[in-house]
Image (spheres, rainbow, N blue to C red):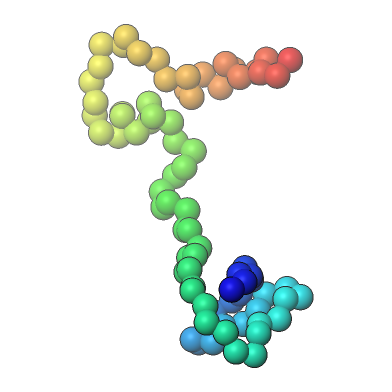
Length: 78
């Protein structure tokens, strides 16, 4: 028994080979469906501090949110 992995597209229930590979005329196969992942909705650039303020979270100021200090990464990689 031999195995071959091919990347395919599914269109209206039909399996279509992707790229230069061709499908065998007759074969048994296992199919794994990989669906596209949609990015989460909302504003992905808001900081944890912004999110906490929106939730009216009250803290004692013991912890800081580095994402509110945009200069903290200025020297990264130097």
